[in-house]
Image (cartoon, rainbow, N blue to C red; front, side):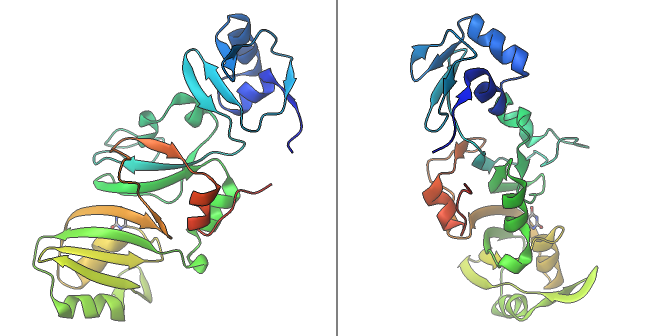
Length: 241
Ligand code: URA
């Protein structure tokens, strides 16, 4: 069982601002704990499973943040963007404040599943190719997909920045112009470059799955959700501690 912490520290850990500001939120009657108005920012409580309400917004306590996000097109996965708005602008401020980062990146025009966390170890483990975590992309192509192209992708293609070939782990043709491809690495523009290398062109790219975690049907574009122990298990991970 986690050790008790003051309410002020708990709010701070969740990204609600400086400790002083968190204290002031309590004094301003803007914080409820499990539905009950809090009065003392110094009150100690066990943070696990707490439901905070801060200025009317419900917020589950999570020691570390692990989330799934359904990325819309037209957003960049960085804080300092060059040409398009940042996906961080689509997330609630407390998540950004506590330092949540993307687990790998999607191009600005790619849509679909992206994981985010403030747990550096988790991000590292999820992005190392050694872990062999498959990612499934649905690729809409400009040219019809041929068996020869799929064989080439499965057999390995050489990209211009690295002599080691890049392999598709699996390819499933879903339509004349629609391919589901699984890859385990995360090289720069990997899918687009692999498709170009076999003589086709990506007209649309959408990520549906990471490991065994499939984007939930009810997670709309631009929405996010917490990942729980059972979700992380599908990613081959468990919440530490
Ligand atoms: N491969 C790409 O080319 N782009 C992405 O966004 C992801 C994988």
